[in-house]
Image (cartoon, helix red, strand yellow):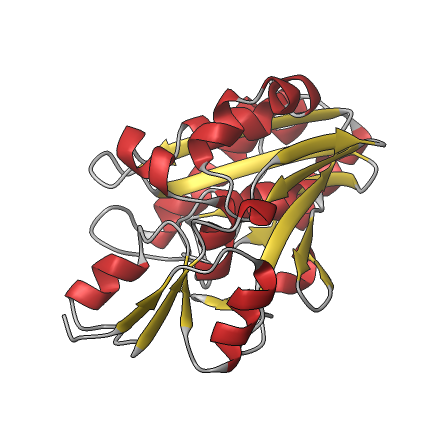
Length: 259
C-alpha cells in the first residue's frame, strides 16, 4: 500500500473542502482499504468521515425513515425505530457480512461503492428510497448506473438516505457462505411507491423485476409468483452459480419475501 495523506475533519463543510482538494472519502473502509491493499485503488489523500456527527443517526417522521450516511449496519439492525417502521430493512442490515463488518461498514459507504452483490442497493430500489447528497437529492432508481457505478459526481458526498415507510415489505437473500454477499437477494415492497421488486447479486447492478411486480400488483401473495420466470440474459455467471441458476432463484426468493 502506498503512502497517503490522512485527515479527520469534524464537519461536512471540512469534508467538502478536503474533497475539493482531491481527497477520497473513507467511510467504514470495508471495501476501500481492501482495494488499497491489493493496489486496485491508490488515493493520495484520504478524508475519514468517522468523526462527522452530522452524518450519523436515524430519524422517523412523516412516514419516512432517514438514515445518516455514516450510520453503521449494526446501528440500523438494532434500531427500534427501524424495526417498527420497516422491519425488512432492519433484517437486511442485520444480515450483512459478519459482526466486524456490521460494526464498521456504513450505509453511505455501501451505497456509494455500489457493489453488484451488496444488500443495501436492493433495499433502496425496492423501497423507492432517496439518496441525499451535499448537492442534491437522487431517486434510487436513478442512482445505480452499473457495475460499481453511480450517479455521484466527483467530490459529491452522500449525507443520508431516506426510505418511505411501506405498507408491506420483505427481504430474502441467498448468500455466498464465505463472503456473505448476495448470490441473489430480493427486496419486495408495497407502499407509497407502488409494488416494487428489486434484485441484487444477480446482475452487474441492482435492477427491478417488472414482471414480478406486475404479478404482485394483482395479488400480494407468494402464490401469485407461481410459474414466474426471469430471463438469464445479462445476468452474472461465475463459479458460485450460473446466470440460469441466478435467474431461477429470483422468483423463488421473491415469493419467500412476500411471505
